[in-house]
Length: 382
Ligand SMILES: [Zn+2]
Image 1 (spheres, rainbow, N blue to C red):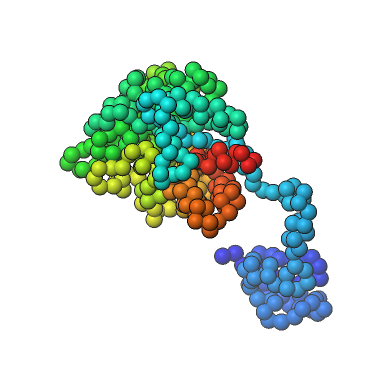
Image 2: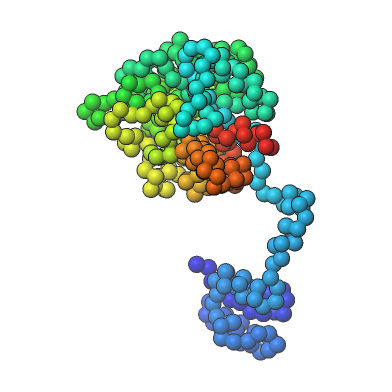
């Protein structure tokens, strides 16, 4: 810790860094002789750290009147450090086959599985609220061991992309890139039977194929969420070689194996049939590794980084914000959303205020982009 010598030269107070002891002693006696009017005592001429000096100064004469800047509401707005706008939000859409289907998810009030025609209507209401960006998740009719629907040009997401883009060419459409919604075992890639987990390198090849299918169908940005090592390199190479070097990648770069995803698995129908995802998603206990994961994706060429979930991981958001200059997204996940909904239902919170305070917290922590089921409600209030 840096130590300071503190001496009173009437006002303002001055501090200087420690010098060698002979100089210090000379300075001390000089001060003793020349500043007899100053507050005196051994405590005063000892070594202090910065916070001790600050609290001492406040006690001496002045305290800071922070409340001056809080009296007038206009001034409060002028000094506001963080703001949220509808431009900060990406709204998730869950697409399934069929027509006229709009099924509310019991565990996520206000969130629906939709057929493509309903999703097209939904985009009209999003645009009316000033929301111009969505992220697509697909619920295929048929699941198999590799997740073929995700790599098929006639799969649910490729089809939805073409139809949504035709109806709403100006809507910015991000696609979630993973296999857990498409595999019959619910894991995020091809299984390695020996290890009883996802085979990293075979899955990389499939991720590249899936990305190209999405790009061809009109995706504006690809967002791989499977936490495979090397996924950004593989997807970037795949996209570039197919003529899509202009398509950005938003990586779910630091994604934890979280219990907050519970309600999402109801809506996306993506619960693993055995085991869990702890052999590829991150341990919630690890902070240094969380930063390394995102920095590795930056090095591989990710355009935007992400922390998922958001609410219990704001320290990680700040760490990555400070470690990288790339734009940073957070995923305000299903469990975080449902907790507020259920608390509102129980009458224990002011839902709108808690929602806005939560979203503001994400931005204050360092997020540029918030993927959130609250986007419509929040945009309506802004
Ligand atoms: Zn997945």
